[in-house]
Image 1: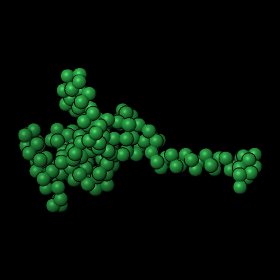
Image 2 (image 1 turned 45 degrees about the vertical axis):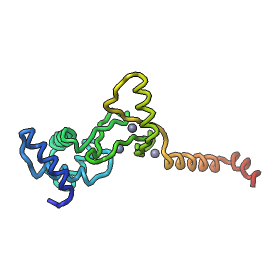
Image 3 (image 1 turned 30 degrees about the horizontal axis):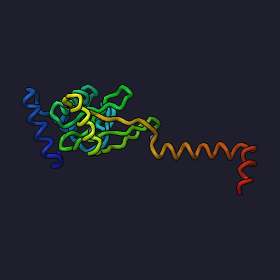
Image 4 (image 1 turned 90 degrees about the horizontal axis):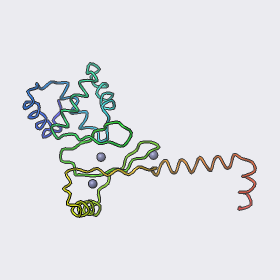
Length: 170
Ligand SMILES: [Zn+2]
Ligand SMILES: [Zn+2]
Ligand SMILES: [Zn+2]
């Protein structure tokens, strides 16, 4: 086992003990792979990554360990509106919100103190005490927008009558 993530491993160890479970090499490996990956992973994504290092680890073990990581406060569940649960780092990670590309699934994390304050003010106005929120903006990322523009250009130039029109601009 590497010496990375000592703090996180300590947190996990304590949670495992409290839950009356045993620390296993498989669980440790799953935790390590999760911590090494700065992404929003589904249980299947993590399973695929873990498989590369230990093909003997089953999908159920990965799924259950992810649940344990969430309970321990090391992971948090995020949902991007496609019905799948994704997990990201939670321990010592500041709150942030997400923009999600509906074309390629890319995510952009952002934090805005102004938006956070505004949300608090709106909640207060309704005498509502927020405990948790997640702000999700769906749309098209810069790469996909560029790709769409290029495809359009390509379509236009491959049509003879359009080429004629565009040549008048030259
Ligand atoms: Zn927020
Ligand atoms: Zn995209
Ligand atoms: Zn995130």
